Length: 252
View (cartoon, rainbow, N blue to C red):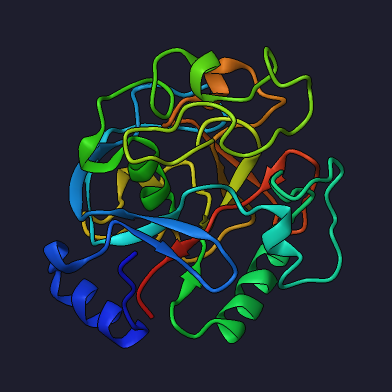
């Protein structure tokens, strides 16, 4: 597998030389990341359940980034932190019962341990673009398919508990569980009207707020909450056994 140094990675990404980027990266603790090539997509949906507004549909352009092939697994968490907070324990199960601050503390420790790459949470736009399959996407309702039973662990097939990551089919980019299993923290604050004034290029989200964005739905969710455009949010101190996270390799 082709490996690149951190400094070369930044140079390549900054100059958008996608032909030189490896399709996958495996880091020092065994986490796998998949390249999402730069692109422009229609973010959002003309749908909203009265609480998490998904409209208006608007264009967003993103630079290259890498996203975790899987939700952060417990075996990876335990290489950085000695305490496993998860209710349903197992090496290849997603770490859960994670609040936003705990996710950020894990990232801080990982960045200190592994200086080859720079880790962070995805922005809401990066999460949705990857969930939609990036430039390879086929506009499915859920991440990778129109049938949630093929790609998502949710209330109809999960046994009402988290499951091993990668148990079902991946999306077009080879990413697993972006619909279902555990809901995933994003970096940005939630705002009901942010989509109305979001910048075109690499939107980061509002500069302030009271809750952070959560995406993807979980093992507890109904199928409509698994849609790639569905938005949710929680306070940064909130944690439960449906909440986990996925990492990005990005630019400092």
